Length: 97
Image (tube, rainbow, N blue to C red; front, side, top):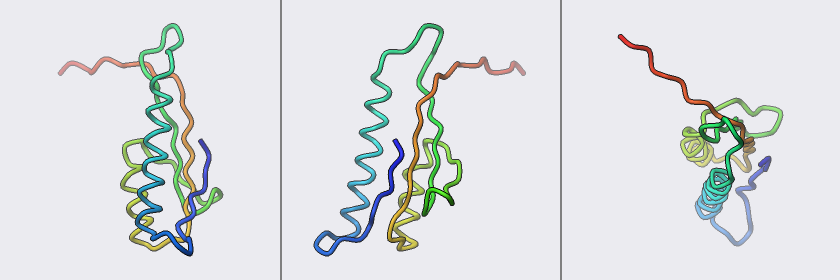
């Protein structure tokens, strides 16, 4: 998913547009996680980028996306860019102490 969300609309309030963006991101993540895993893969991992534009986007963890969207609303940005790419994930054992 590579998408720029616009937070300005003549008839829709910005907080409703932010809620719609969160819903779209969560729906995409759920849809990707439902896909069947290839052999030898433990889970779906995601490479995420977030920023005001595609050029200024920085790498963030998938769990930080919600906070980034809230921060974009607090900064009163007119739009923001989200990129989420699914990849194969492999579990690692925790080191023993």
